Image (cartoon, chains in turn orange, green):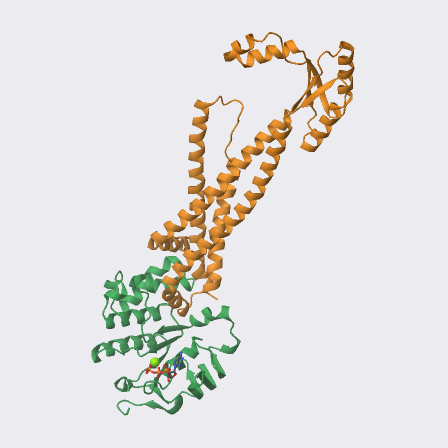
Length: 291
Length: 234
Ligand SMILES: Nc1ncnc2c1ncn2[C@@H]1O[C@H](COP(=O)(O)OP(=O)(O)OP(=O)(O)O)[C@@H](O)[C@H]1O
Ligand SMILES: [Mg+2]
């Protein structure tokens, strides 16, 4: 095996330019595909986080009596899917608003009276998540007599969900496309190498070399190129990610948005996948070349 | 024929070889004996190279049967071909040395391909290179060598795997008489070590040798066969 490795390394050294082109192409493909996957993964994180902590605001009509309010609270608590009901009075709401808008307090101070309605803040059970369920729930709550409006950022969730779904679809398609394109590129470089060395291969066969003996160094070459290209691509992505993160940290308050890179196991799997791409490319061209 | 009692190593029965409509060999029946030194002669286009190619399955026969060391070539599948070829050491008409590998690597390759123990390969390569007087050119690339030197490397490579049979196609083709004599003496050396040697040549001066059998081809047919005695070759 050591000898096969030596031969593969020598082949790579003898074909430096072709090898560099192949590795670079694999790196670019992996970079684009994994950038997509990374974005998708983080967007998915945001969505789940959002859905986990989802709250629904139930605004009451103005001049709702205390009895009607208590009645509404009671009914809300009885609805399936609702975890917790907290009353937020208009005064509380104004206090919250002032806290959030400290810089623009002057604006609020000018108000003659408090325009905010009384409201209930609902925490939902964790199994009530899909946008369809949320809509059903909000429609049901809206029929209660004292309720003026129900709000939970419905459109935002629906849009975000459908975008994520679109991305995941596009992600798979793009992934498959890049996979095939990369296999094709590797197959082509190996074919060029084979072609430039067809005389040598023919001589090897004439002196009794088995197909296996001839092929193994090419396979090793494909595996090494695939792995090297993947490491390069992922490395570039990681570098880009880290610089993005440091920008985020200084720019916006980072607490809300927890970005993460692929876990090490995923990186290892991707490198293996890259090696597999190299192997496959080799297989394709050897199959054609050695009939 | 004086060696009727010897074992045969190659047997050909009514062998025909056609390239398209062109017949290169016609109805050739021939036994070749272990440790024989055989010349196949005839003018250009007579079918000498074709005969050698059929033996190592460089080309399939069109008709007839060939046995090599007990193997029926018509029964050998693709994956059995390398093992067949390792029975032979072949000196090709155009040498077929790999130009991008050194003399040493060209020879070591044969041994690696045959699965020899890596630890013994350097010794073996040096030893065959010494036999043909090329040990000091081990690191040269074939294009840097003269025709005669390349021919000697080709002989060394053919002998490196200790083959049972050495096939030599015009081994002295482009050499002067002296260099040709040197190559022939190397073939004698390997013959003396027990190999069967088959030489295809149209160079009649080579045929003046004791204890060698000569078969002559003409238009793909066997014309004559006789054991040459010293000095009575045509
Ligand atoms: N691959 C091929 N395709 C078609 N015809 C061929 C092929 N190889 C050989 N021939 C023909 O078969 C005949 C025998 O050729 P072969 O090479 O065996 O001759 P030879 O005796 O070795 O000649 P030379 O002394 O010139 O080497 C020739 O007429 C040649 O044209
Ligand atoms: Mg010939």
